[in-house]
Image (tube, rainbow, N blue to C red; front, top):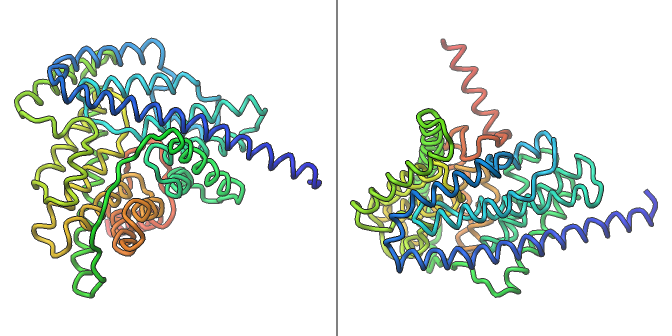
Length: 415
C-alpha cells in the first residue's frame, strides 16, 4: 500500500468513526433524556402501570408487522458479526427505541444498554453500503457500533471499546479494529457530554488495603456473583422459552405478561423492582439491602424480557449485583460500598463473559483504587457463571471454554 493509499485509508476510517460516534452518541443522548422522562412520568403517575398490557400489545404488534427481521436484537448483531449476511435494517434503531420507552413508561423491568447498542449497531452498519465495504470491514463496523453504544449510554469509553472486542470474542484482534474501537467510543462519549446529558455517578468512599484475611471472603462473594449471573441468564431464557411454547401468537405474549406484571406490582405495593432501578443501585452503596432484593429483580427482569418487552439486561444486572453485594455486607467483613461495587460489575462480567471490560468499567466508575478487588471479583465471577450468558448467539471461547471442555471430557471418561 502506497503512502497516498495509506493516508486515504486512514482518513476514511477516521471519518467513519467520527460519523458513527456523533450519530450514535446523539441517539444515546436523546434516548437517555427520553428514558428519564418516561421514568419520572411513571413514578408520578403510578396508575399508568395498569396500562402495561396495552403497552405490551403495541410492542407486540409493532415487531410482528414491522420488526420481524430485527426481533433478535443484540443477538442479530452477534450473528452478523459471526456470519455476515445482509446489512442490519436501520429500522432496528427506532423500533427498539420505541419498544424500550414503552416498556419503561408502563412499568416493565428492563435496562438500556441493549437499546443503545442496537441503535448504534444499526447506524454503524449503514456505512457498509455507503463506503462500499466488504464483509471483513462489516465486522469492524459492528465492533464500532457496539463500542459507541456502550460507551455513550454508560459514560465509560474505555470499557465500551474493550467490551465490543470482548463480547464478540475477537480472538485475532487487529490493531485497526482496536484503535478504531477506542476512537469511536470516545467520540460517542464526548458527543453525549457535549449535549450535556448526565450519567449516574457511583462512589466507593473507602477502599481498604488488601490483606490475606480478606482473600477467602473475596473469593466466596465472587463465586456467589458468578452463580447469580448464571441464575439471571437462565431465568431470562426460561421465561422466553415458556412464553414461546405456551403462547404461539407473538403479539399476545407481552399482553399476557403485562397483565401478570401489573397485578404483581399492585399486590407487592412497590415500584422498586421495575424500570431501571437506579435509585436502589445508588442507595446500595451506602445502605445494606434486603437479602431478597436481587432475587425479585431477577424475577421481574427475566419475566419482562421473556414476555417480549424491550430493553437491555445490563442495568438490571447492575441492580442485581449491587444489591446482592450490599446485602452480603451484613455478614462479610468488607465495606458496604466496596461489596456493592464489586457485585455491580462482577455479575455483569459473569452474564456477558467479559471480565476485562468489566474490570475496566469498575475502575472508570469507582476509581482505580478499587481495581484489585474489582478485577478479582470479575475474573472469579466469569469462571463460576457457567457457559450460558444473556446473549444466545455469543461465542464463548478462550480459557473458560477450554476449561469447560476439559471438564466435559473428564466426565465422559469417568462415565
